[in-house]
Length: 239
Image (tube, rainbow, N blue to C red; front, top):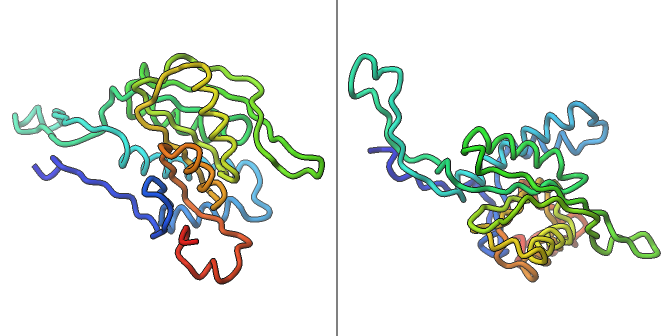
């Protein structure tokens, strides 16, 4: 009975961005992320930390966003008593999910989430697509967007959850290019689109909200970097 209704709201900071933006408030994840970003962090430590961070991020996303069903599972005690059955809410293992592997930075996070999903859902319903994106720069070397080089999309995404694990949400151009690739290929409309980032910027959040207001964003850290002090004194997104 006590596991019948499991409302789950991830710990997140207060902000003035749209309600589908979730900037998590997790001291453990922030500790790992700080160590992963510090000068001198090299392999294999970097991948170990990023793997742990994306498993934590995957936990929050799946628990908060994915559909559930009621399970009735015989436990080891069933050999001793007919009451040895656990009943309660759990993730619906039949949920169809597509994980996007964005080359380069998103390749390893995508693999972590893909493996994580296959532990929890039916593998037949979990797919990994691959898109190769490169930065576009102007004559001064400033990043102006992203260019799609190639894509390996395994089929329709209708009725699926589309996950985009990409460590840095800087400008929003990567998410835009990914979604345009699916739209241009007429692959259908997913049930939810969830972008999963370690760090996001205000510029990224503005772009994604303006261009793709249906995208749900999860991030471990917001980087307001060089914003002036009077802006930093306000709630994120207030100005």
